[in-house]
Image: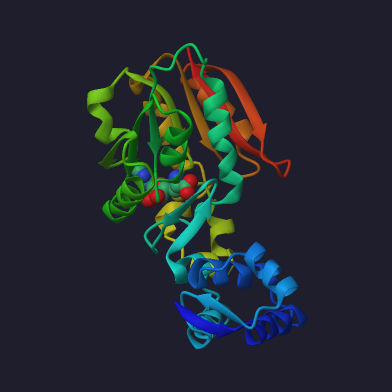
Length: 289
Ligand SMILES: C[S@@+](CC[C@H](N)C(=O)[O-])C[C@H]1O[C@@H](n2cnc3c(N)ncnc32)[C@H](O)[C@@H]1O
């Protein structure tokens, strides 16, 4: 631990507030790299203790802040970590930074399953950091999870997160193209969840450099109309889901209607668009008849 002058730290925060930078990014950096949370900083202000102990010295933290500013590099990739729901996940450039709007998928999945039937096998297709599968099992301890990703490096990160966060939960990892590595589970899956790459080409090309230069293209890019992966996931779903099994997809703001049509074509009913907390039709769900 490093002993830092409280005055120097608070002055830096004050100067950043006066600049046009997002102060929440600095709070995040101080938390993820310095080891001091926003609420601890607030407490510090009131008490004005002379010294504070951080995990890194002020020069190091300022160097990382400059890296964030000049390269537009997200704090999460600088610190190799990200908060998502109740946990802190390790991340690298091989995985997407788990997004706040995706958090709701855990409630959607949990609420869709009747409390009487807890003998559930679910698949998290395109698990990335493992955030969805790990969090879902933390809330539904009797379920069994199968997490897949096309990228072996993503699988390594998800496995590390699983060991660190909840190694006792029943989660297995598979590398391969969507359902393909789950051949042994054909007709056995009660629930499948996916936040697949769904950004259409014209949107992808205009993404800010903080996203385009750092996040993996394979985690974001969904082909010309953004729907290419979603079509693959839906068309193979009937082979893997039990009758009455659910599919929950995250999608781009304007894709839900088209996704419902595809789901209908492949034998799904109970189709529904669910808004995220920002009022956007972010999730599409259907039940395999
Ligand atoms: C939008 S990210 C979602 C990551 C994580 N589930 C989350 O919500 O933060 C999409 C993930 O799908 C994976 N992916 C892309 N193409 C795939 C494919 N053909 N088969 C399986 N996974 C794929 C990517 O590597 C990436 O980890």
